[in-house]
Length: 361
Image (cartoon, rainbow, N blue to C red; front, side, top):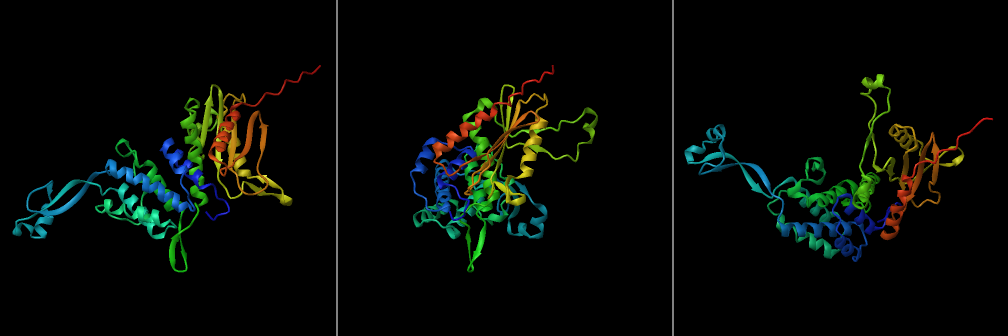
């Protein structure tokens, strides 16, 4: 990975495994034992293993609408097309019918992205060949342009739940490893875009706590605006306050806003390094509106992915009775150390300590 804001390649895999809810300890251990010189190699390995397993289980099939000219009736006869093509004169009928096929949008996405990695990715020859060897199993699946895949339409349900991580990886490749022109040859970038990494980072944090701390009810909560009762009819143009992660322990609540930026601090007046003001305003607004009891039980934490810059945010303060923090998470740490840091975030569930009352004599 050649970007200055890179993270350990194996940690990208662990983040994907959590983010797409496909974590299996034996798979993580197996991938940890592999050597990856390039992010493309990791993604090629994940796709190869996942698609190979899916082929053994059976590719996802669905009923695909078809129109064909047949000697016997199948499905519904298209009378107008049969008449316009004079098919009946040849003893044939134009029929519309559904056929149970593997040519689904899910498999088209897999095939297209596999071809993208084979043709444009910086993948080791052994992995390139392994991916290419999967394509004959997808010969009945049509190929589409990766940029035309409608990811939001690829629904995941019980029958195709195993596709969750595979399609997540495919989307990450298309959106995060954008094609670029280099001396007339189109190839993939060797690092993930900040936008793609920010989305992955948010999902990773949420799913980590869902896996390891379900007792804290981790969820991405929408915080309602704390409005006066007379103002509730005029809320149509207020923005939605959507948290990345909300953890609850009894009356205590922690709101985490995950941020993946090239720089976690901004330059203020006199080149002073400060936290991004709009991020701090955002987390404070979430907290103050969520703390409906006004008892300081809601805490807010801005959690930046640590960058290579020397100065990093480190804030733990109380504003208007609520504890607000700004911290970093070093994604370049070995996984076990990174997990210890994630567990350490739970201390932010401790609310602000109320200041002692002042008595006047």
